[in-house]
Image (cartoon, rainbow, N blue to C red; front, top):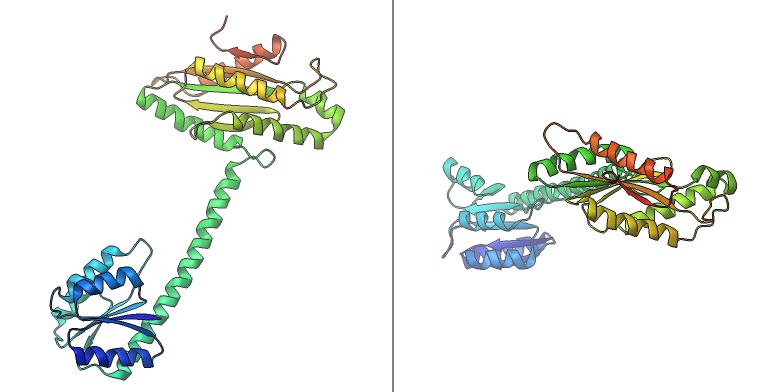
Length: 313
């Protein structure tokens, strides 16, 4: 335990330093407020014994500067030392950021009791912070699990439904376009019938990874929409921009060269429908989803392994 002793009287400072060391702690000492602030920043003591009257700054100013230096979640106990004992002095010390007040001359027994009490508080607080961090990590993991598809690792349908509404409102607020892609693995039922469900699961994982790798912006959202179908949301993207991304994804899936004996192409391919819109105040995001879905249906109807735009003839 490191204790910073800030006392303008040399005799008192030496006495306090000896008592702190007899308690088993490491003592750091100074007589000046400015030096105390600098030593606090450098050594991060576990406790500060702070005289109110100092030759440069008063102890209240030092306490306020120490509190201003602490990061969120940090706390170092400060015990004021003073020959003044009025209630107003105690109130001023607490208001400045102090935690306790000792009146001079200081009893060694009382000082030891105060140090032990503050040490217990520091340990309890550290334990509480550790539990809080664990809870935060667990909550973040729960959020990740609840928003992710367990098989492919991309976002799940629940997350997609929430995200498309958020992005729709953002696009409407900023008068931006919002693009969407609906992707479907061609002849996937036949793939499962031919190779089995375990191979089908592995196929979906590879396809999802290919889609994710070719949606490069952090704002792009890839989600498993259902079964062998994936949805991609592209904020601030026109239909032309979405077309370029879709073609990259389609070629990336072909490049996986996943054998598919029951497909006319003999490898796994992807059909993609794309749509883009500038949201208005009277149209919901469902309109965009339906437009992309209709484009996907046309891509499948026209022979699969292709990209169709919602505005194409």
